[in-house]
Length: 256
Image 1 (cartoon, rainbow, N blue to C red):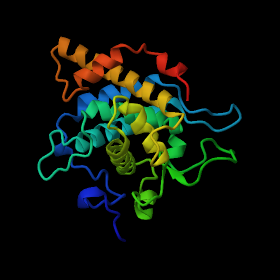
Image 2 (cartoon, one colour):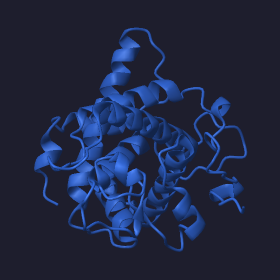
Image 3 (spheres, rainbow, N blue to C red):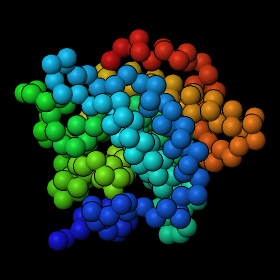
């Protein structure tokens, strides 16, 4: 079987536990733990009362996999602790990228376990986008080959790792294309959603949530520092200052 390729020539076998080498990610545990705390605080995917829903235990297990995938993708995209050769595709910090990945995944799928498995969001539903895969609802495109698009479906760590990395790569492309602006977050999210436009109406809400997630991650980082725990790589100080001006629920009321 031909293995799909990730950027930079890394070969992926979806049946393996993960295509990331754990020894390359010494700082992943604090970041993944913080991301998991944020994910568990968010509202779960909608499920009608009459449908078979994901149990709390299944949701927790899936979000743990997602949090590790986001931490790994964020660290690799910023070449944080990664030995050469490593090509940086995100100019900010790992926590900054992790915050954007959390915001996009939440609005695209609420990190539904069923969506990541390639199924309808709930049993018996009839309308959903079969062209988009994974929690980040990635579609096949010139930047995402069909083999790669098929490989990001699944609940295993390797599938979710690959989905998070693909989303991070697309975000890097979007920031390079549209993010050279004071309002780079909203413009990057817009370009990610549309492929070219920096003025998508739904971008503001997602961008504000990303700032809020960054605010949460920065606060947890500060708490670990205060208690003497290792915090790993952090959300940038400029981003943290911007996030401080956003209340924990203000992103919910943004237009988009």
